[in-house]
Amino acid sequence: MSRVEAIVSDFGGVLTTPLIDAFAAFQEARGIPLEALGAAMARAAERDGGVQPLFELEKGTITEQQFVEKLSAALDDVVGRTIELDGFGEAFFSALHPNEQLFSFMRALHGRGYRMAILTNNVREWEPLWRAMLPIDEIFELVVDSAFVGMRKPDPAIYELLLERLGVAAEATLFLDDLEVNCDAARALGMGAVHFRETDQAIADVEALLQ
Image (cartoon, rainbow, N blue to C red; front, side, top):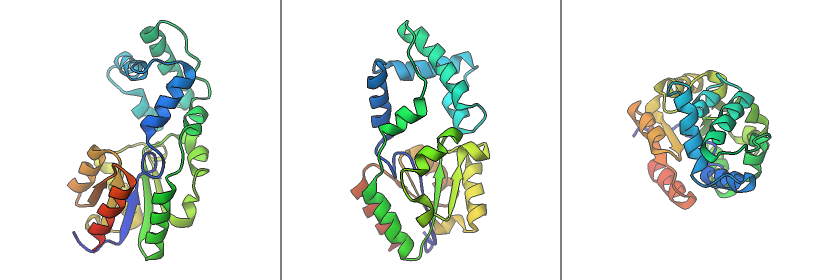
């Protein structure tokens, strides 16, 4: 790839501990059976004509409260009892922790002169929660948050918006995400991409592409 000028990171699952661990902790705390949450998400999507409510939440087209209501109704069907979901965001983030090692690496990259940005599928109401986890603005000059732009990864349009706001060519941008489908979308636009699986691997892969 061309000389890298900008490095773009996902937030949840990359700059934090794995999202699946936070979901599991939330389910355990609320007494939700292991497979029930995924089944409820699928049931809620069926009720909405195949539209996944989590994706709509991440695009900002429904509120967190509307999402919780849809998920709660679907969980009632799946498990046969009412499960309390109030405070979903706060409970979820209480089980999510910063990836300090990777954040330190990002800080070092910033110090080496790379431009830094975040591209995240997130929730409007959760912005104060995730921004409180790490000093984002000390390192990252740009944050593109799905909930504020009405589109989400892997839609090519959100990557194009990121590149436009950065003013950097796709070929000079390196993207880091914990979902391969999101990395594939970045590569299709000409960006370099690293699939985050664990921290040491991701750091090594990023460094290899910066050589």
